[in-house]
Length: 355
Image (cartoon, rainbow, N blue to C red; front, side, top):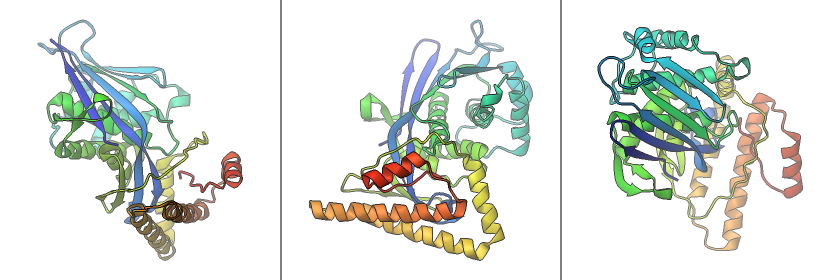
């Protein structure tokens, strides 16, 4: 399941569209931040980002209302706008467009972006959008500068459900921005539904920028979410190294949205805090999780040629996922959603809550 990007150029305005998939982590979440292996797979739910750049001329650019950077979040029903003059005034000395050289957001840059967010009326119930807005402004200004344009984002992914919605946002937005900036170009290959597929070198650049956006949103992410959203399919991720996994048999998963929100940044910080307080004990936890992920990745790549072998393979994968889940239940003292628990008991399905 590859990430894809498409472009359409007309006289004057330039329109770019990109999409990126969400993900599920089969094993290794949180421990991957501390050097353990994790296994993740892309899912067939996407975040779509479209970018319309207006023609530029002297000063602010041509056309009425074109001298602004706008963001339309369709699923939230919210639109944000920053006049280019305001962006230049706030970010002119802090951020300059350099799409080919991904760099982290500095404290001074983040402070300047925070001041820009103060100009917006963000509903109290949706104040959590601030981190995503900060990532958007950083990526936009770092890749395109203060060129006027409008970005529209929609998604199949529920937010805060552990399905990589923020990574898919950062990947799709980075892909659209880099294509519009001319830093990447689509290849000759076409993927699903006629989308043009970026080449590997272009995907690497998209992934690096998306990771910078993820760091603004989550603090100290491992990079696994943006990597699987960028490159697709199933991967093993360890210490920043990505290994593509070839599954010879379909791995069947039932994804249930419990509608119980999660805060990735707080969870990552919680694991790090426990590792700091109990280094030896948590080192054993990380070692156990690493072993589970390594064994799971090996089983995924085994070819099962008959029903008995396929059933045995699925049973082993289910056991490993449950072992991984039980470790994190102990660490976080999770209160499992009763409906999911009943479904698991009733149907015999193995379960893994996204934590």
